[in-house]
Image 1: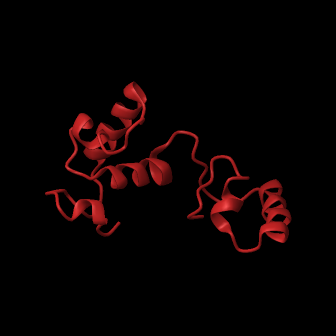
Image 2: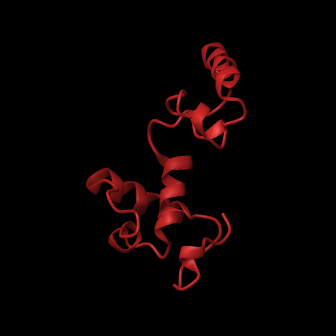
Length: 103
């Protein structure tokens, strides 16, 4: 995941997430939500920055995340919305529940 500017002043772990870190993040967000990402690492017992926790949750761990190939319906939505918005993939992703703008 590389370094985030918010992490440069703190002693935080970088690089790959361990299964134990994933479990801590999932448990914390399941029990408490994620109202303030900057406080999540401390409250969850993680040596990560808030941005790293948010990206891990949004792109990999959230329960409604869809993985794998796009369905025919999703492909049609992409085509239709792309015709309107062009290459604005983050905006297009908002029309695909459970998909991230990284896909």
